[in-house]
Length: 400
Image (cartoon, rainbow, N blue to C red; front, side, top):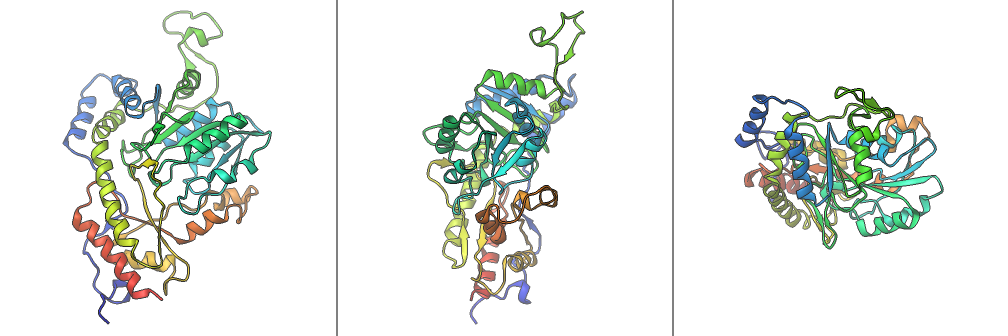
């Protein structure tokens, strides 16, 4: 037949070792940075925290940064800072990890899902205004895959309606929007994640950035149980240097200096990480754009993207197998993919609380077709070739 037989059809896998969709890169400088903290006087609340926050401000261009335990904490702190209350509504994207909407629920407010652009997979500004009412307080956009959201349009909508714009940049540290600046300095609040699979990792970890000193003060307070030693925030005069007061209700969202040291070292390699990921995506784009039946996320020219995820779509009816079949075939080739994401409102908890299928048909369609392929800094050229070969030979074998 003149074509390779895929492993799923009885052929030999393209590789003997499994290649997963993501993997962290840790070098000796990262290990040394963590070791220096372990040998220091501070394991938490120490100088590594201040150093990381200063570095984040330099990288993003934001005036203020506060680091925290993870990206979920960052989102919760952002929602508390804008004063979400019961009865408030926040417009969110469905094509994201659940934390992007859960953070609204933590404040006893209501997430309102708005559909995404069918080509970019980003929140579609043209669909947002029909969701806005007197209860709407904010929009949470997600930089899906690392690509910057349509920030000029979203900013304009939020300003006209008196809303806050929260940018969930868990995927997009290092991305910039041409003409506006770096992600982290554009929205009212930007949140970051440093989970193990992200471009920059601390194992876990998160951060918020803003140019608004009032919002920053609130987020810094909510990071620490809403407990303060600042006399200007206290109800009573301090009784002594030991004195502190709880002036609100929040969680312990403090990051350790151990994590901060690792993240800081990773940020020093951010441009290397970004460049290599862009190179890999370029090779993928070139190969997969030639395969009928496979769809690619549209790259907008305004976004200089530090790519976190590379997603292909197995178009309905194009192959003799569906997305699940293609996913399984890749796994048999020892290319271990993933899927990002199940639309949030399709999870059982949301279904039990009144959300239903059909809210965002474009996001649902994208989810039904998508597969996330391996993408990380330490992938070799041979690894990239193996991914391309596996996808290509499965597509060729099963094409209708």
